[in-house]
Length: 199
Image 1 (cartoon, rainbow, N blue to C red):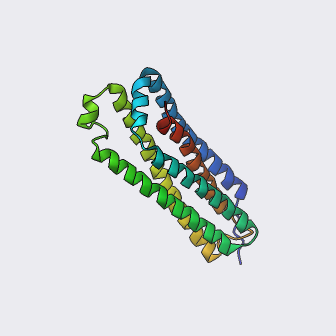
Image 2 (spheres, one colour):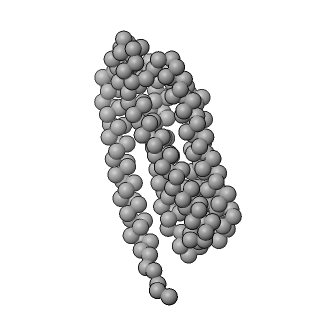
Image 3 (spheres, rainbow, N blue to C red):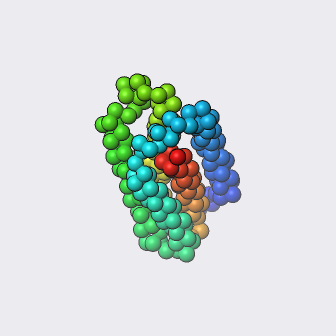
C-alpha cells in the first residue's frame, strides 16, 4: 500500500498567504471608505442612519457564534469526538444560512424603499449618500459571497469528517476552512461599525 505524503505545514502556509490576499482586498475597500468618509462625512452619517442596526447587530452575534462553533469543532476533532465535530459544523452552517437570510431581508427592504445603486432616489439626492450606499452594497455583497463560499467549504469538510477522511491524525483541511471562516467573521467586525454605527 503506497503512502500518500501530505504537507500539512505547506497547506497551512498556503492558507495564511491566501488569507493575506483577502485582507488586502477588503483593506482596499476600507481605505476607499475612509477617503470618501473624509469627503462626505455628513452624507455618510445620513446613509448610516438609514441602515437597520437591529439586522446588523443580529448578524454580528450570529457570526461571532458561528466562529465559536467553528473553533470548537477543531478542538472536538483533535479529541477524536467525530459526532461533536459534525454537530458543531452543522451549527456553523445554520449560522451562515441565518446570516444570509437576514442580509437578504435587509437588502430587500432597502430595494423596496428605492435605495440601491443608481436608483432614482439616490441619483436625485446628495452625491455622498450615493457613494455611501454604493460602497455598502459592494462591501456587504462581496462579504456575503465569502459567507456563501465559507458555507460550501464547511459542508465539504463536514462530509469528509463523516467519511473519516478528516480525523484526529489528519485534520489540516478542517483547520484551514475554519481559519477562512474566522476571516469572514473578522471582516464583518469591521463592516458593522463602519456602516451601521457611523455617527
